[in-house]
Image 1 (cartoon, helix red, strand yellow):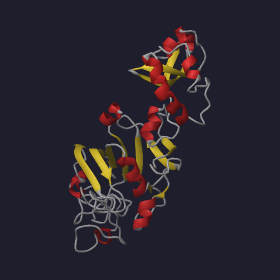
Image 2: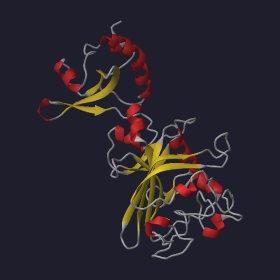
Image 3: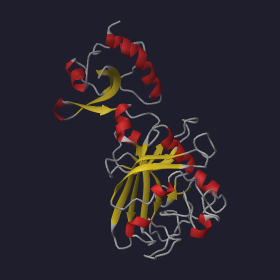
Length: 316
């Protein structure tokens, strides 16, 4: 076989199976793809020049690989490229790569062992290039969601992705275990000042103990940047503590002391799941980020989100 044909035999059946259930304008199968006369096409323009002037999915040869792309016709009969979204996006970056560029509630499939199980998530596509899966939000809503919850509730998640919520530690582990991930924390004070903290390495371990992670949902975080100050590195290596499951280094239970749930050390420099005050209150039980104002001043809005690290995505 010529090289392009060998690539098609190896890759196209897998691609076709990955998009099972998607309506294709041009049916592509392992057999029929070998009969396509545009095997040398590099993009939609080549497909167009080869004589195919209909919208649909085509196999194109690009960077030593064969991919399926959706070719559409724009004004003036000029072809445009559009990537094929993954049938089961594992995170919001997959959705962004598939052309969904607006922020909002979407369905993702983060479970490695149960890939067909959907999760309702909020995708943030307007911050720092987009692709963020939001896993926590606090805000000044008329009715406040109680974040003083049990260990199991934090494992499963609670609240609504369209309002205040915690996505769930089990999901957070799934989102960060398959690729090096980064964390973005956006914070706004009651005075209207917005700051951010970003970590280019972020991982949440499994619930159960393993050889490398002896604490439940053990936090691994590093490589800070941002103008909010670093209030999370102190918590690196800590397990997740709630009032009914103590895994911090304090003689007592930090979650009880600080009325929250967090990767407490003994006790904290950040407490973003702490009690929500409806004004700027300086109190250790508040939802705060210590370095934001060098105090325990409560914050008005908090958003935490994660995505695969860009350098790793570029190597995939």
